[in-house]
Image (cartoon, rainbow, N blue to C red; front, side, top):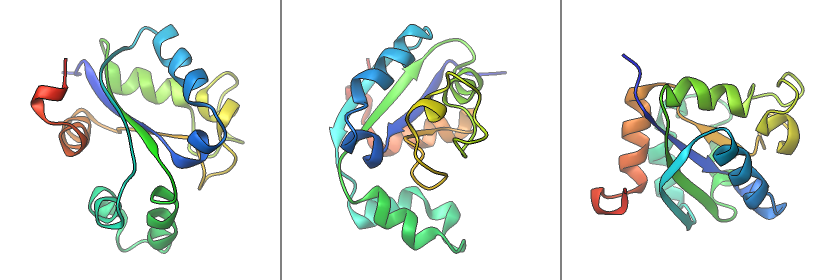
Amino acid sequence: MTGNRTFTMIKPDAVENGYIGAILDKITAAGFKIVAMKFTQLSTRDAEIFYAIHKERPFFGELVEFMTRGPIVAAILEKDNAVDDFRALIGATNPEEAAEGTIRKLYAASIGENAVHGSDSDENAAIEGAFHFSGREIY
């Protein structure tokens, strides 16, 4: 069964480039309801914990450095089939391979600086959302 919530982060590159509003417009125009959102910055420890699944990968250090270099926008989104629909909206990790009109095609600079994070499963959406938000912050 698919869930109705997913988690996203607008990453430091997109924040630095002034894309927050445009990305949020794309998200809401696609029928997602924002049920939690905050403008924040990850500490090194938070980024290491959040991306622990990639700890053994050669890009882990660069990923942590990138994700802590500036503020992010974290959000929990709600819609039927949220994870799959959001993954389709953001497009492939590599913006050169992303479909036209997707968030990454429009706003990402590279595989490493790909503008947004989107949960890859219902389970991870719940874990990632709980990492950034307490229950009282979700509406």
